[in-house]
Length: 117
Length: 110
Image (cartoon, rainbow over all chains, first blue to last red; front, side, top):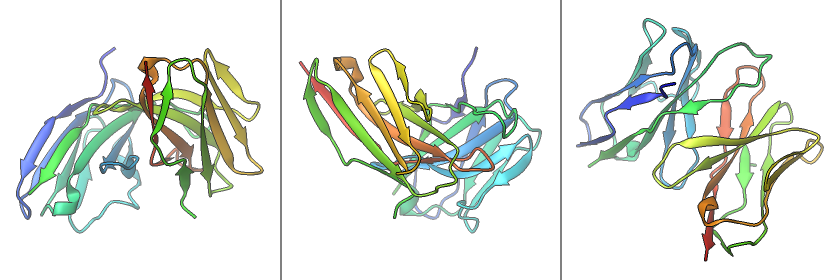
């Protein structure tokens, strides 16, 4: 079974530029998550989708970050404009999305390493 | 109080040692608990879920104390391949969103 795919794997940009990350979840997984992991920290949830609807985006800095999952499969995360403090690994994860009664495992992609100069 | 707090690391142990990681969480309504493992420059992967009765998977034992809001992970007979960062993870009630601790790094030496 193919895992969660992400691209690009690495990105270097200058502050105030824009950047976009792409994620393709495991086939059939209804729930998709974007996390930000700053060096030395655990992953922090930015946004959670259930199919193409947003379940939780309370920690997404909406003035500069946006995310979409238009067809309920692939997702993109955009930063515009980027700041130095956005340097981090951006992880995408997916889970089956069977419902709240089930304890689900989240499967992570390899991440995109972003460096903002 | 931080939502999920873990022992600061790193832990340096010799092969064959037993090592224990501790974690506390602040949300008493949390329903599910996990330990994830993250190798250097890799993505996190589920190590094991943590059940109220305690559970064991080979050399790994996880325990949960809901009254104290405390989770632990015990690794017996440490191997070089156990070197990684161990993340304590708590599922927030309602939406299956996970809150991760900062992680504790384990270095097992020959």
